[in-house]
Length: 181
Image (cartoon, rainbow, N blue to C red; front, side, top):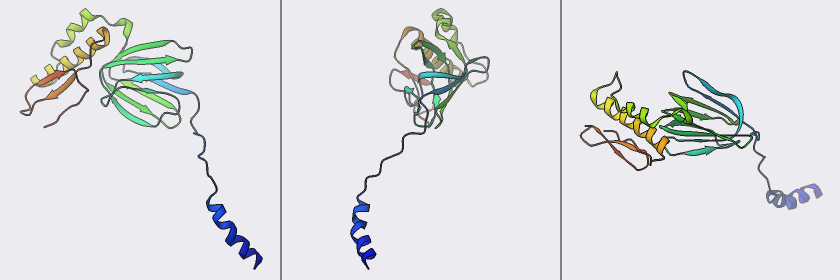
């Protein structure tokens, strides 16, 4: 009887007990892999931060970042090494995967160290790209050219939009969105 009375009185107190969240399981280190079809730039390297341009906007990745999968847009990827130095690369497109264990994989269609880019040679990027229809040739090459210009000259990001008739592409300097018909 006494035990039942004790349990009845202590039950509300037990309900009021504070519970704390567990510390995040991610490590303080971030394992970073960055590759293109022709070269591996980082392979499971420990880095401090990675800044990436994506179709939904640019963002920075730190250790214990929330897991995500994003599509890259043409622009600059900045890798901050543990020693504080920064390395910049131009990427044409690709994907970035952030895992719960603080590992990050960046796979780019094409990637070049920023110091290897030449503005004069980027003019070649406006030539039509083979294998597509006339409309896709012009819009794809123009988008890539403007991505290169943004990288080298620091120009605002460009947007590729289709008009309602499905004809041609237009570039504007607003956030990247792609409208479908």
